[in-house]
Structure formats: structure tokens, C-alpha cells
Image (cartoon, rainbow, N blue to C red; front, side, top):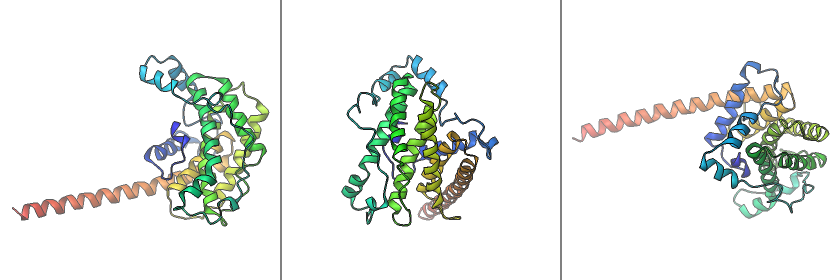
Length: 273
């Protein structure tokens, strides 16, 4: 989960495996969400393990986790952005300073909510969980991540996908805390569901998959489960399966290509003797 503190611009193998495992776990209910409290981790089991661990490395890692309550005490939960496409207008990847300035608020938001989620998982702190939910609720009330058009700004679309991954997975953990404010939780879940539907609505059928598709599919899967949204979950599951199949095709292609190169190199070595 610490990996979610930074928005990776490439879909690493752990990210891919995380999305795939989430889909596989729910494969028998591909068209229906039967466990809305399911997450990418078994929350109860993880808390039990981490809170009772005697492993010195784990205990040291837990001590080093950021705290939403203390490390971000001066951060305002209300500084949510409506995410207008104009914020990213004419933004090009080479302009790293401009990209950083435009997305700073989103990165900070992700760091805060993930810090609270990590603390809840590692220590069971309901105070940290409540703080994380408050952060999410502030953005829900501001209707953040909804005021953009991917046709006008693909960069805004990309950013929404990254942020929704952090928010969706965080909320999939927080829903397991029954002590949290129910009204807040419903508001956050409804907001995330609306944002996820808009996120995937810009995708074109049959469009070749890339790392951004994985991010969107992962966000939609986590949120679809939490929101008990069968249509969103089914859509995400189909896309993950399709993307996974394409990835395996690429793996097999590269394996064959590598084998051919090995054989060709072996023949050349034999001929040179």
C-alpha cells in the first residue's frame, strides 16, 4: 500500500498482479458483487498478523509509517479540487515542473488518505481511519474528480485514474471499520462510484491496452465492489481479463523471440569454432 503514495507512470508487475488477483478472487461472482467489504487485502487477517507480529523488521517498518493524524496535522481536508480540464490544458510530459505543480494537490491527497489507511491496517487505529474517511468525504462534498473532459485534456483523465486508484483501494479497506460514520461512508462510496463511471466512460471499445488501462480497471474493480455496483465490477473484470490475455500473448511472443535468439547465437558460436 505504501506504493500508492506515489503515482507511478508505468504499470509495474506488482500493480498488474494486484489487479489480477482481485479479479480472480471474485471470479465465481463475475457478474454480481456478493462481498462489498472485500478488498485487495484481507483486512482482519492483516491486522491480526501485524498487530501481533514479533518480527523485528515488520515492527520497525510499522514504526516508520506516516500518520495522517500527526504527520499531516496541518493539512486541510477541504482543499479539494474540482479537477477542471483547464488545469492541465496544453500540459506536455517534458514540462515536468508544470506537471508537478498541476498535480501536487492530488499527490498530497493520496499521501494523506493512504497514510490513514496504512495506520488502520497496521495498528487498527480507528482515529486514523476516521481521519482518512474525513479526507475522502471532503473531496466527495466538493465533487472532485468529476469536472473534466478527457477529450479536452487526456492528462486530466490520467490523473483522475491514478487518484481514484488510491481513493478506491483506501475506501475498500475503510469500509471494514464499522465504527466509522455511516453517512460519511455512503457519501464517499456514491462519489467514488460516480467518478469511476465517468473515468471508464471515455474508453473506446477495442482500444489497445496499456498501463493506463490497468489503472482504470483497478480503480473500477475496487470501487465496483465497495459500491456493490455489479455493472461497474463486471466491466472492470472483463477489461482486466482482456488486458491479462494480451499481456500473456506478449510474454509468449517475447519468450519465443528470446528462444530464437538463443538458438541463432548458439549456431553462430558453433560455426565460428
